[in-house]
Image (cartoon, rainbow, N blue to C red; front, side, top):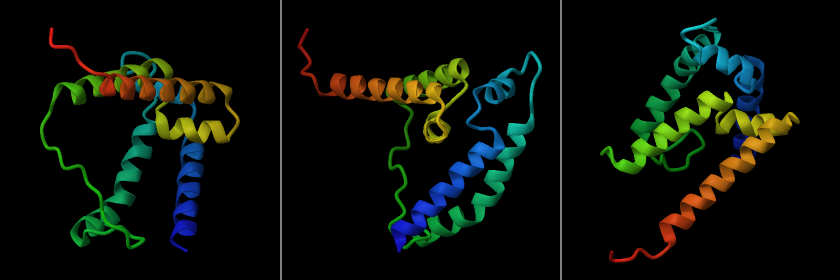
Length: 141
């Protein structure tokens, strides 16, 4: 039952992303274009999402379990390191260029957008390259 509930929550989330325009790169780029014709509608979507999610997230954090009864898994690292900063910069630049980020990209694939599929393939390739770089032996030069 928990998996079915999680599936429907994810489905509802994906439909919300589509209806809000978060899977539309043109709308996202309009939101990111602060110096041009800025579209503030996604700021309202994000504020609404924070408002809706704040209470359940606060409850789950205090209970140390999620709403489906599983353990609440929060990041343990509290320091800023080179990898975190570089990854954040790459994510931001990629979001600014493509107008799409991983969650909406997956929704876009489900909606049949070939551009989202291309983005997901590039994202998976980047993740694979990162894992390969992390695992390869380092020389003592």
